[in-house]
Length: 300
Ligand SMILES: CC(C)(COP(=O)(O)OP(=O)(O)OC[C@H]1O[C@@H](n2cnc3c(N)ncnc32)[C@H](O)[C@@H]1OP(=O)(O)O)[C@@H](O)C(=O)NCCC(=O)NCCS
Image 1 (cartoon, rainbow, N blue to C red):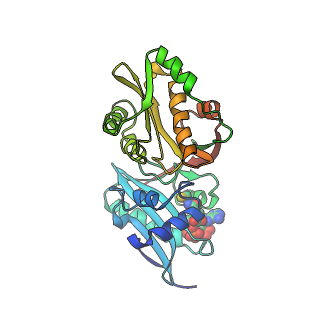
Image 2 (spheres, rainbow, N blue to C red):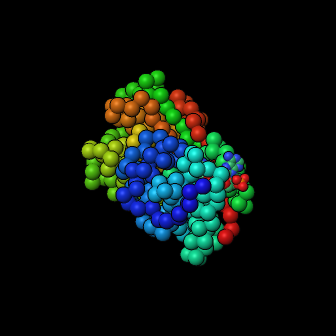
Image 3 (tube, rainbow, N blue to C red):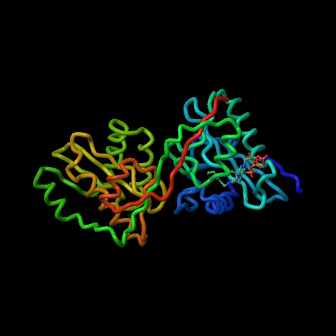
């Protein structure tokens, strides 16, 4: 058996890493080079010493991508090329990752999605070997599933005109955001939703000109937003409506406006990663669950 050498991933290997991640279904379904860049060398929490690579005959055969978020060591993605498995390569990479995380003073390793810039929301339930590896290595899971969904854009009714007119009569204005409003929406997500969404809103909004960002105002009060292409091309989200304004159809209009855009860009399906309100996406966009994930943790 050829010798396996461990090293650190180089910037010129990103294309190879992207291809491998696609092959192993570790990347978003529409991941491109910009996507992998933003999850690796472009993520300030991923320091180069936590991007571990394994080589045989100079071929990249395995990888573990880690980062530190607060006091948590996060394993963002892991994989070993088909044909090189059950040789202990992932075991060596995991040993190395755990040692490096422990050296950093983190007390817990987490194999799962942490926003922003996650690969997948967790370890896919289709990935039996990865789940078996983690369990054998003492990682535990609460078995709470995160899910991805997919909406078929050809079959989903995306008309928004009547709903926008009805909401306008109720004092709610819905429109596309101007470039100088992106910061306001980013602050809004920080104040009312999730800090991880700040950079996702900026990424999504900035993915097109005019911004891929739709907003709802009551007077001069921002009450809801939705964006797309933040998690990858053709990915919807994040989105949020203030609690007092929910169940009035505002989020549904913003969702359909985003889906119209995704369809206009030539995509036949839209993806919703780490979907929160599954029933809502099913009802408004005919979306269905495509992937389910568990997350794992181990004290170091
Ligand atoms: C998970 C993965 C990285 C394991 O790589 P590997 O180099 O084959 O792992 P190792 O040889 O170090 O295996 C270590 C242990 O994990 C467990 N394991 C690995 N593959 C397994 C399988 N197919 N079935 C059951 N247990 C398995 C075993 O306990 C194994 O020890 P053993 O060979 O002594 O029985 C590899 O299968 C893979 O790349 N899968 C696809 C990518 C993936 O699922 N990534 C996670 C989401 S991003």
